[in-house]
Length: 225
Image (cartoon, rainbow, N blue to C red):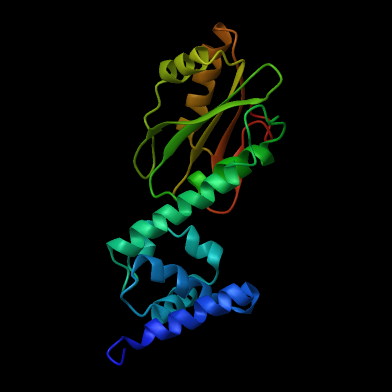
């Protein structure tokens, strides 16, 4: 017992404190315990404090880009993988509010559904939401991944999937890794092209939403649909 690392006793006391009253834990202690599950044989207190100092809050830390997160000394593959899993858990928790048949009646609601998937990515991803005749959620799916400034979208793949699920309408979504959600010329071109193809097949393109770092752009809200 005398040869045990000092942090094991400290971690045990933190867990007892957690079980007694979680609200008594400091922010860095919560993070310290979380990191301990990724690297159980290491003192995680200094790293927890360093992460909070760098990122400022749990939210900023949780959705930090991989390149930023992995630059912090002490972040190895174990912690990076654990953090990816934790972020996926949080994304699914956020998405669980949007059950099948949930009515999507505003760009704000759609952006909230998409932000935990798209706002922290370092490359563009193109997703779509499919809805029925009453704008109720049928599916939320990724179409493709791309580079830092574009994602190769093939309209026939988008339309084929919509027809396969017998959707009545679709909402297009993608992110801008640079943080600015304002659409590019290519974004306008793609939207018009998909609208034309969908219209010929009796499908409605309800919106195209671009997710930025902290906000979004809606073609429908801005009068571009």
